[in-house]
Amino acid sequence: MNDAIVEKISGVAVPLRGDNIDTDRIIPARYLRCVTFDGLGEHAFEDDRKQDPGHPFNQERFDGASILIVGRNFGCGSSREHAPQSLHKRGIKGVIGQSFAEIFFGNCNAMGIPCMTVDADTCETLFAAAGADPPPLFEIDVSAGEAAEFATMVPHSMSALDGKPAEAIMIFDREGQRAHVHS
Image 1 (spheres, helix red, strand yellow):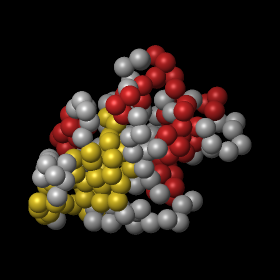
Image 2 (cartoon, rainbow, N blue to C red):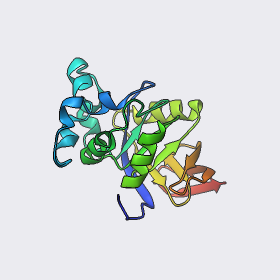
Image 3 (tube, rainbow, N blue to C red):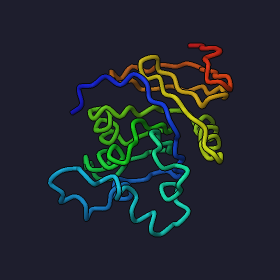
């Protein structure tokens, strides 16, 4: 469990398209025997990355990404804590998606990795923005329940660490200055 309060997360976002991505795909079962979680990050999505050379986690432009954008029901399947641990060890500090498996969501929040839910249209907007080359910077303001891709207006709703939903629209100008917030 992580007692640190996460207020803001910023950085590159890696878009991982697809629904029902289960914990077996996030971290293959052969890595569940580890005594510590150290080194798990290099094995995140290992089988998917081997099968698909174009997998986002194989692309240099997403190296060091701190935000993961996903589809629906992310983290479904077995309830292993290794899945969010592998993402954390890979450098992922926040996840934005349409929905999350309940246990995965809880494990992430317990570790201090906020999971933000967005509607399908917003998710598609975020996928498109994150897929740009070079990828833009994103910011998640956890305490305010806001997220934005710089220079884009993105409506969203977030399940905060206390489980209370928050809604807002945040607009950033090209210099990254907050131009408007509506909640």
